[in-house]
Length: 426
Ligand SMILES: *Cc1c(COP(=O)(O)O)cnc(C)c1O
Image (tube, rainbow, N blue to C red; front, side, top):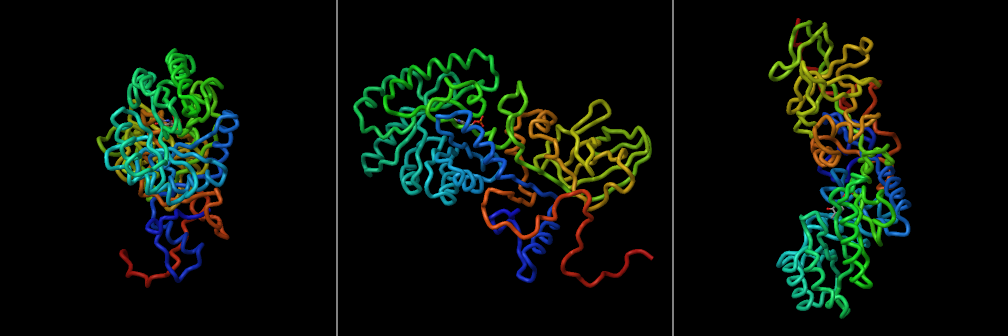
């Protein structure tokens, strides 16, 4: 396992071995977020196989759905992925710095004065409006840039893209050749609903217009769209969420592997009497003498307040010492209380790590408790966690696995002993 590549993330001391440095650094964090790059690669391969002979790209916008765009791009590029999609030029710049070769499309489109940026990092805009197309054209003529662009056509989402009649109007230009358009694409609005009539309608519209872009590869499917079948796959598919473990087929079992594991530290354990309340608003009352673990994560870390429990409703669950335990009371900014009364005595102690995501708690399960979708769970994952990357061949692995995570391990002592402070009591 390797630490995040950003040297700002993990302070290093020259005095210690790499492993001791890592242990010392992790002790400074309330939680540890581990991204399994091998699982992302396995998910990409599965999607690629499902879509063959179409090319399988990877959507890595929003920092690869919170998983780290540079790390994910590097790992997938090594695995054979040749095309990436991001949302903004700034995201593209970071991805380009990580992977020199692959094609990078920027979904956010073309604005005046962005041409130089695109040319400098050799990335392609996804053009979704006739004004954009005209401005891009001017830039290409003026500078001779031939880096290419995608044309996005709206087939029912009514968000980005040329209307069908606007797209029709540029067909003569496409037929004239030497147009620089390297991809024609549209986006599905309801792909995760297998039987939505919107899918067939969008497919029919896109198929008709894409066939007129002769010689230009076509792309329609996002993650869920891939599972709608071969007619939706065209020449290239654009999965995002499924790469990161979100279920692309919510009406069936999840075919993807989980990617993110999130653990947070127990800051305190305490007991409360029957009838006592816990947390802000006193919304949760102990119905028995209750043992609580207070853990170092909260809504500021992307653990939504909607996962709170109160006297009327159960909230989310957390895995403590291998067992599911319920949230008690409101999730606060930096802390969550967990009812650990059903664990054996001393199974959970101060300094132990508990699992918020992973060990069977899926992104989709958390999304259910958060009142949202897996996409928002991932893109909300907090910035305060230490980040570890597993697999992906990103850097040389350390000799020792990270001592970050199991509930069995007692907290490690600080590696550099400070002189003991005077006793507070007695
Ligand atoms: C975000 C996005 C995708 C990826 O969608 P998922 O549902 O995450 O697979 C594909 N295409 C476009 C245009 C997007 O904006």
